[in-house]
Image 1 (cartoon, rainbow, N blue to C red):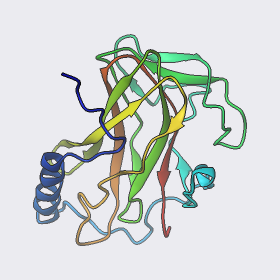
Image 2 (image 1 turned 90 degrees about the horizontal axis):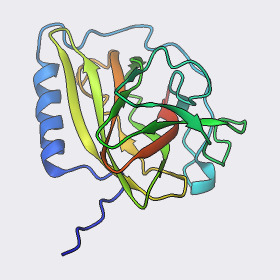
Image 3 (image 1 turned 90 degrees about the vertical axis):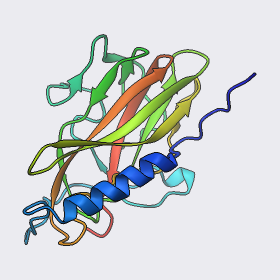
Image 4 (image 1 turned 135 degrees about the vertical axis):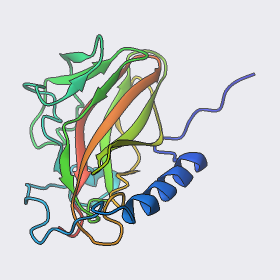
Length: 206
């Protein structure tokens, strides 16, 4: 029996239910959604996915092009940069490196400031074998604990392609107030080895 291939960016119903319940719970926790008059710092934006019909503006996650130091990333065993980048020059220049994740390993981006106006993110992925599947989660710092919310699966083959648009769940922690929160992205190679490159967050309406 063949297993159905996961759709890129698919949000599992259970994960969606957990996300909604968590958002509602956090919104009513004292101090969980402190309003911020200044919002998040302004960042340079571009349209890295325009050739795929996505004309939204995105900002590059810190060190998310994997071309230099990864001192702010949390890398699991065996995770590191390798030669070879997505070929579309999504950052505006052709890259030379990407992040390789052996099967079973994880990598987490640095925390970044988000508001409810940072609803989505995308990145490029390829498999180092016939097929790979990444589990993608968002990690939030809350006043009480660090919260991990699973979002879905991203499947890829040996050709570099952008993933589907995925949700940041930026409603978590600021559902009611429109305040700011600290978010990180976590990638876990569930099936096969994967490579990721050029991780972008959409600061829509900022």
